[in-house]
Image 1: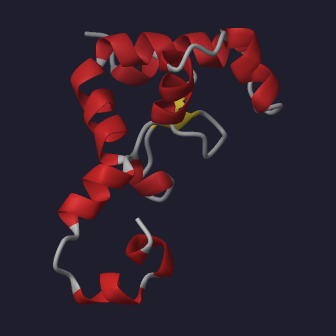
Image 2: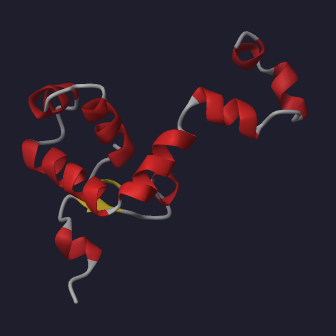
Length: 104
């Protein structure tokens, strides 16, 4: 059996980096960010230009990882929205002290 790390050379997960979310190897750029840009219509060349420490192979591997782990990455994308975080933290005391959240 081939392990995930051998299938995706440019994607790694480590508890100490971005909370264990899958990131591009050697960076702190989460796969969900790359996929988010791609879903918004950015081309691979544009994504590479936005992050000078990554290359085309890394972005294509992030896309491949996404299609192999679509449910997981879609969940991470959903949890990364303001709406989700507002709903999740509704009623928590600290929210009344947050300038950004009180204006949302």
